Image: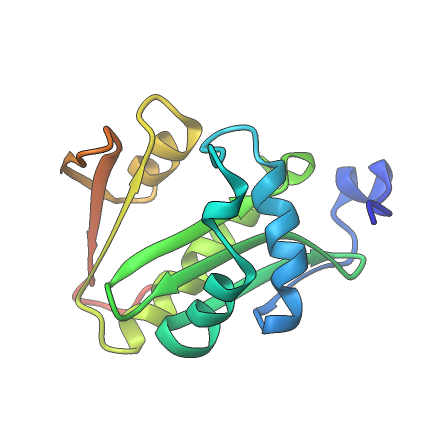
Length: 159
């Protein structure tokens, strides 16, 4: 269902951001499988039921659409104060989509009462550089070798 033209990719016409619903799971899964970094070793490790649980019970999510197609998404697990996912289709990278999804998710999480969020990502990736750039602080290395980052709620409102 890749009907997004290269011209649309270049000029970003028709880009929208909104809260994710269970109807977006197929698109989010497609984006997750398309990424070039932080790839899943086994796609069966992240199931539609997991997306649904995150969106309906444990947290919230946001999607970016281009011409009605999901091209990026972010999901936070409020029950664990954890960023569960933040991914952008490779055709739409480096256009500010990840940052906007990040900001929507973080702002919502802190407004919902979280005082700190955490995530982990592979070292040496663009994701690592992104999180450092937007203010996340490295707090250690997880058992799987990923870098753990934390972000504290700021004293003032996030803009």
